[in-house]
Structure formats: structure tokens, C-alpha cells
Image (tube, rainbow, N blue to C red; front, top):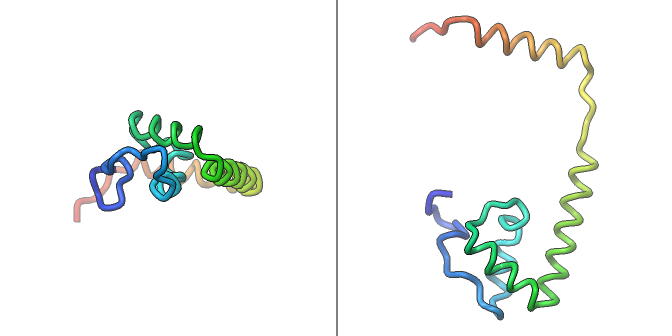
Length: 97
């Protein structure tokens, strides 16, 4: 996040009543993508605001369920083929175009 539009780290820290701001940054909070200052501000808001804490709990649980459900098993043969191709590609000098 380099100060781009929508960067939650560039906005003012959420105050105790700023539910909209806290909910807008919820996914950044869950993914650990906030500065320490923003993280503490959101955590403080969640500690003080039951509706936002419920939204946080729901989203955190949803993220866990999705992560568990999206673990496809890749056949070993395919893993080996991909590893071999990547190994060969890193050993082969690249041509300048």
C-alpha cells in the first residue's frame, strides 16, 4: 500500500463511533495489512462496538471456512512436472529481444 486511493493506512484512525471506517478496513485488518497505529485503532473500536465486533467475528469465521474449503489436492505427477519446468526455466539463459 503506497498511499494509493483507498489505502486504509492513509486515513485518520477510526474513533469509537466510526463504524463505517472500521467496517471498510475490516478485510485489511483480518489480512494484517494495516500499520500498527491503524490496527490498534480498529481493535479499540471493535472492543467498544458490539455490532462491528459481530461483523468482524462473522468475516473472520467466513475467511477460515473458505481457507479450509479451498485446499485442492494437486496430483504428485503434476507437481513434479511444474517443479521440473520451473527448474529448467531458471537454469536456461534468457534471450534478449
